[in-house]
Every structure is written in C-alpha cells, then in structure tokens.
Image (cartoon, rainbow, N blue to C red; front, top):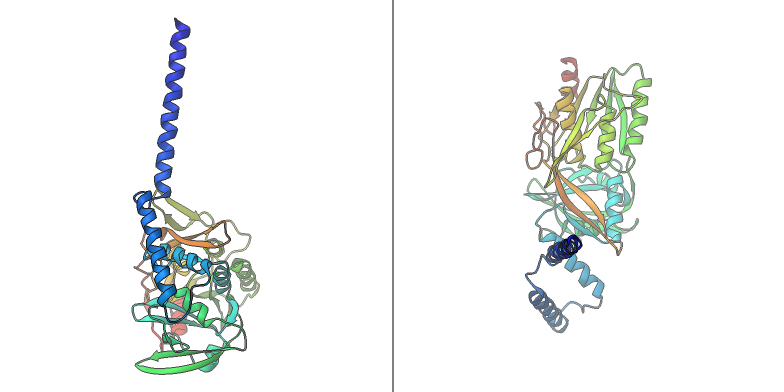
Length: 384
C-alpha cells in the first residue's frame, strides 16, 4: 500500500514538473514574439513588408534594392528607433568601430563633435588644430546641411558617417550662426586628440578632459603624478566643458584619483534595483587638493557623473553653465552576426540621489561665453 502511495506521489510530481516547464516554455515563447500578437499577425507583417519591397522595386525612381542585407539592417534599426530613445542604436560592425573611435577621438574627419538639441544638430566641440578649427567652425554653430543635403530628418549616426571620411577628401557643411548662413568646405584629415592635458597658470594646474574614451584613466594617472611632482601646483581647475561623455568604468577610475576610496561615484537604477558604484583605492591621489570644475551646456553623461560625484562628496563648486542633462545608461550587446545593439538600460543619480537626466547640474557660479571663466575659477579657489 505504501509502495502504491509513493508511486502515485511520484507520478503527480512528474506531472507537476511538466506543467511547470510547459508554463515556462509558454512564457518564453510569448516573450520571443512579443512585438506580434500571434503567428498570423507575424505573417501579415511579412506580407506587408514583401508588398512594400515589391512596390519600391517597380516604382522607386532613384535606385533598385539589390542588397537584402541593407534591407534587413534598416529593418533592425527601425525596431530600435521605435523606442524613440536618442541613445539606443543598432550598429553595424563598421558603425560600431566608428563609435569606439569617436570616444577615443581618433578617426579621419574634420574634428568636431555635435549633438541634437531643440534648435537642431549643434556643434558641441571643435578640436584644437583640427581642419574645422582652422577654417573657423565654432561651438554652437547649427549644422543645416551636409554636402547640400538637409539633415534635420537624418539619423544621428548617419550624419556622422557623412561628415567622417578618408583624409584628403572634403565635405561641405552649411552652418547657421546667429541668423547667418555660412558654407564651409572642409578637407578631412587624421584626428588624434589628447583626451587629457595639463597646463599651469601660476600655482594652479588646469586639467582638461575632452572625452572618457578607452584607457583615458591611465593617461589621467600620468597627469596626477605630474601634478604631485610639481611642487608649485597648489590647487586644480578641472575643465569638463564640451566633454560629452564616454565610458562609465573610465569615469569611476578617474573619480578614484580625486576622492577618498569607497565613496559613491554614481547610483545606477534599472527596472529592478539600484546599484552604487564606488571609488577605488589608489596609491596616488589628488583628494587633498582644492578643486573647482568648469562646465557648459555640452558637459554631458560621464562628465556629469564625475562633476556630480565631486560636488556631492567634496562640496566642489561648478563654474560655468548648466550641464546637458544626459543621465541614462547604455549597455552594448554584441549580436551573433557581429553587429552591436546599444540600448538604454538604466538611469544615473548623483551620490545624494539627484536626477541627472533632463535636469542637468546647475552651476554654483554662472559664467558664459565671453566671460573670463578661468579668472572666476581662480577667484573661487582663493575663496575656498
């Protein structure tokens, strides 16, 4: 009797397991086909796509669709763009390499950075000694056309592809500046900008970080050592103007040279939880040096993380303009075919819990283009 009872229990347990696994399979299957209600609507979508491609191939005046891979890539980009998130992007292998090179500021082009604001696509950075600087392009110029093509409806990365190109070739930019339209024919060249530089003014070290690209923290460490070795330097101006961001891990590393260990650099909040990222122990540090930070409206993302961390943990003053307000996290997902999905997965908060996204960081001392911002920074250091 007991044997029969155990047998019945075993059968019931096996049935329960199959029901549970079946439920999981059902859930996972529905997750996989989430964009569509059922297989019939999936078929309807494929039929619509085939119909559109057929109409285009028969009637479109400019060119035939000959590359199926281009069609599929455009379709995948469309899925990501439907999120209406300017920071989530589908990268082809070439586009991903261009993205990485832009973080390191090593590429062939004209030497500008740009971003999308309500006014349009605006120049946020003009690199020193670049072709763009030599011809007179300026921060805040609005890009209206590239090679006579209107760009207001073009994808951000597409515009970058049109501006970059082989050294020796040229690109025409039509710029709007204070109501005036100006054309620039710029010859492209190799761009290799120093991500971190140190200059001095009397007893002040001015550290400029232009991007949080790959391995920038090791270069920053060299700068830290130079500051320590220079006994004349008593305080620091950290210039983050026109620094539109970069890699989070590099930002945490640099923050670790400027603060005590085990302090919160940033709070990362995803759908499920909050995670704090902390400074690390370093054998050299600038944590005892008085510091002020220079910002402008193009100080964004990783730059805002560093500025917010130093403000909250060390009460360091920000001088300049309110920052851009990009406080969301992107993660890179490598796909099986070699392409990459850059997707917004979380948002950032300062150590004190302040929102960065769409808010930005307000300066403690306002200063604008044309003001002697360095002089204001020197005065702020004296008053510390």
